[in-house]
Amino acid sequence: MTIKIERKIVGYRVNENKLDDTQSHVEERESADVIQMHETLQRPEMLIGSTYKLKVPEHVSPHAMYITINDIVLNEGTEHESRRPFEVFINTKNLDHFQWIVALTVIMSAVFRKGGDITFLVDELRSVFDPRGGYWVKGSYKQSIIAEIGDVIERHLIRIGMIKPTELDEAQKELIRQKREQLANKEAAAAIDANPSMAEETSSAATAAQDDGFPPDARLCDKCRHRAAILMDGCVTCLNCGDSKCG
Image (cartoon, rainbow, N blue to C red):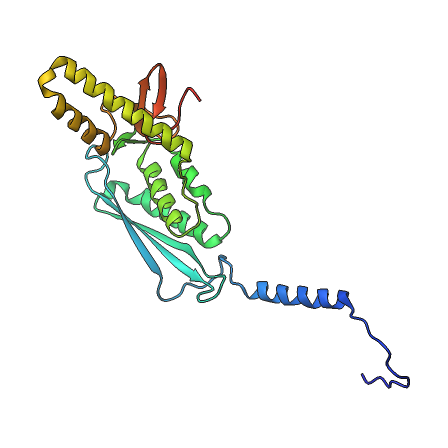
């Protein structure tokens, strides 16, 4: 539209509302161009895969499981680039688990492709208990194979940035250091009283045991589910997560 100006222009003003509207339209258009995870998203020909080996005790399953999680990269090469799990497969030689493995992987893959917050899967899988009882793996108690699969899913989601890793604060780290030092000194003193000639060997052995793992008489920690809780000075403290009954 053409407007004829018949008088001299002596001033002007900027319509800020129009600018705000234009900016909002630009932002909406940019957000509309960002690809989000959804169930109608077509699978590309190639996905990025990560395979995790899951070895449970012999009495639970004589064969290892191999969990493969394939990820899709959304908005590659842009500031909105993100990596999201697209599908999961579990392979094992143990055919006793074939049916529930197929069902579990199909359901988890469907949840992955649905999009949104999928981190709830970790807690749901960890809440499954084996009626025959759980088992120990490297000082950590697992309620069932399903629960340990949940641990694998969590590790993968941490790796791709969907879950932030839980880290101990400085106070917890200092508490664990002090308790480990007290425990090492206590064990060394008890060994010296029993055999004074082995003082130097006992001290180095106590330090090595402290660095290698948790005390053999440690209890199960209710918080982190590791066999790392010890009783010292009337207070139960976990040497893995720093949880203390004394606050």
